[in-house]
Image (cartoon, rainbow, N blue to C red):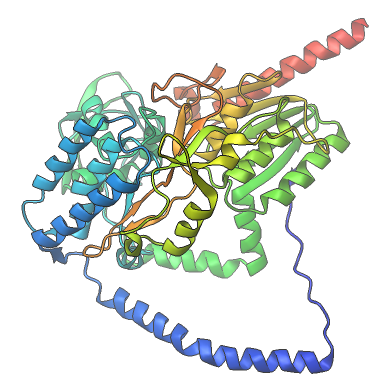
Length: 530
């Protein structure tokens, strides 16, 4: 049984004829006033997209100007710039990558060769760079030439999950790759990780990023090759090497496929699909189990979804719940807190400390996207304390109690992995160790000791227009753990299973369902004896 709660349609209020006419007149006038700037904006965007050239190079002086500005903003406003890399180390990194700007570069080169490895050294998963809006508009719906194999990555292992070249009979699902272009797996993964952000030393998130889009990271970091020397282990256990050609997609194929798929779906169906992708609930009546998949804390009408889901669980007497947050990268802390209230057995706090380094983005305000709302937020929500930091007192002081209405107190299994990040890691920390609650799977990507976020605007570099995310608050978790850089650890560890990878089934979910079945059998036996 699948349950996908949908929001109600909006309510249109009836108004007297005179007021209705007045509103229509106001709408017509305002629409005419708004229409011109909107058309102008769309026209300028179209021109920007049409004339954008990705191979345009920025002069060395322009790049140094952007880099110097970025350094000043990070040093002044980032709350945890020296949390895992000390000031002396960060100063060396800043100087090293500044000196690496030897000549003019394209936007892509500047981003991946300079900004990406710099932000990785901060070891903050919320401090990452993105290409400019013009680049993203230009790249939209394009499919680029790529390394032809889609690989699952864990530890020092690379296994084929798909092959872009369908005519290739060598690299099938499950084939183990041992090196690419002379770099053995350990060296290759270590190199790629040097350009990918994370919280502390929680590498698990980047194993999954590589697994989800190996070709993307390999192309941007290592560059393209006309042919790739790929070493692998064949079915007999022998090591062999094959030269694989660069894979190039047919022109316009991806855009045609997207347009065809969009035409087949109505607007209502598309909205329902988006909701389903954000969150869903299924019920296994045989095992008296609800499975809630929650992929975000940012969208999907979650308040209503939580309310209806937990009410249904209470009314039907469901005693087992699997909460799958393996693809939940976080979002709004208040929604993460709300979910925690539905399942927690004890009162909890969101954080021990939550503070910003500044109370204003000045004198760099004009380079920050959403500068007005972020400056207002910093001013209204924080107070300076004796440590010189600007504290967000709400998260530090307030204890949240379990919900009384539709509270769930049964067996709870929370599925986690490296993509369980930010607000999801806060949820995991709050419920970990409570009676009848088990975290199952892998270490979260979000830091266990704490992370940075709450408000995360973007720095827009004025010359290259590259964007760098800037978390404004450091948040230390309420439950004190050692600051060793790890994510929240599972109670039951289930790593990547090679057999499950080859056969295409969900090993973690299978283990949890087996645990639930065994618990149900034990309970039934006890009831029979009684």
